[in-house]
Amino acid sequence: MEPGTQPVAQMVLSPRMPYALQEWRRMAGVAREAGFHVVVFRDPRVAQDEWLQAVAAAGAMELTEAPALDPDTGRACQVLNHSPATIVVRCGRAHPWPILGVMPDAAWHGLLQARRTELEAVSCR
Amino acid sequence: MPLNRAFRGGRHAGVLALGVGAAMAMAHAAGPACIPPLTYLPLDAHIVGRDTHGVAALGTYERISPDGRFILRSYSGAQLGKVSLMELPATSSGAVKAYRTPFSNEAFPVQGTWRYLVDVSGEHYRFSDIPRLQTAAKPLFKGGMTGFYAAASELGPWVDRGEGSSGSGQRVQIRSLSWPQNADSDAQGVGPLQVAAIEVQDAGATAKVVNTVGPRFICGHRAAADGNVYALPMLSVDGAEFSAIPQAPRAGQPSMRVYGLAPAADALDHPCDLRADLGLSPSKAVFGFPRAGTSAWLTYSDLGHVYVHDRDLRQTFRLEHAKHRVLASAFPGLTRDGRVIYGATWRDCADAQRCPEQAGYVVADPYQSHAYRSYWKSRGENAPKACITHDEVAAERTRFARFHGLSD
Image (cartoon, rainbow over all chains, first blue to last red; front, top):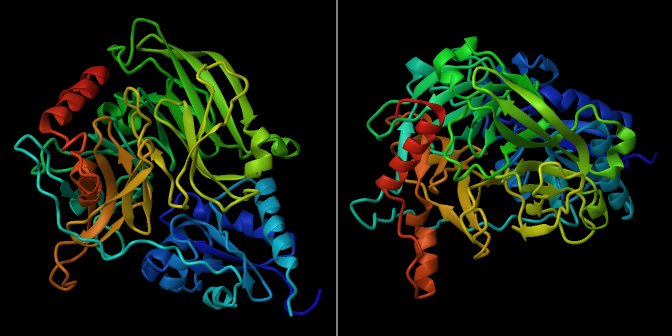
């Protein structure tokens, strides 16, 4: 794989949405297995202490340091209405359609691959 | 790579175009019988507990009863357990009550009547047992769909049946919809969502499932247009439709849409005919009650504001706020009389030091919203409905209480 061509799944999480934190590890695992680098952002409307309490309750301490997404970016990218909301990025180009919500493995994997295929149609250069 | 950088460099980076800075003035009630355009009902932290900011715990995933008296909410916080049933006061001067439940997060009602509340295990509890027995309530039977975003509705004709919630051995038909968590992945391509139907014989003290149809994948034949993955599904109040966002449409872009289901409870196939396209991707679109000859309204939130969508007019109306820094939850609901109720946080004034954040519920009359009235004014016509009246609200409260054998 050329440097910089690894697709990235950028997931925005909010503990205020049912299942988001509980299911993220499974979904992140599917994404990594499919060759994606996974990056997590915290919904910027969720305060840091609420976030820390929620990730501890979900047993997802690896999310402790997740940075808050820039609010303007979140609004522009339509990733603040539901969580998880995942943007697929490759070579600095983001797919315009976020993948919304939790879903079974097969559907999640299929959507990641579809977004990736569409981004791969554009050269990295 | 930071997400914002990725988007600046993205070839498709689009900006959600939302109207901002809209007039916030509240419309005046059309007459003495109108309910207030907006009512804010704060939660008492002594009753519901506090979050880490010291604010009353709001919870999330609110489901609103047909009369607007009860709210089933998940993630209620340590003081109330996972899922609690909140009771709103009959007047704005009363206090919000809270009841504990035996449910796990994402428990949901059987829409239409709220005859039963359903735990995520598929266990159905009689609604009236919850405020009476709280965590000691016992399930009546198990059935229907489980899984992500599960929702259920009682199939008609419950609207005018006028029966109580139990007794007389009545037959109840329930349709449910969800993402299957443990379905055969080889069959995933057949259809993205699953529907099941159960028929229940309810004798009052007991109730049992006497017939089951499904679960079956649905809408597989729409793959050529919509792809085979839908997000944020929600079943309509009457079980005859569902809303969802196709995640990989073959044309256009993902947007919230409404699809039709077969009317018969024992239907094996569903038409999934496209009935509405909102043209944007908001949070979950929740159905109101259909009225004779008209399509059910939808309500949803988008970036902290709440909207109603009139499918017949193909118009969306934003509901204004009357407090400062209001952040609405993602799960508003419509009562049978048309009120919109949602959870929210707000401040009574702009000064964050002087006015600490409050959490609670907002009751809005969409007919008195600035957007709705402006629309009809721009057409040079009188709105078909000026407001929701106190009498209408009281009638729904009485109807629901009578159905469930509750004190009014």
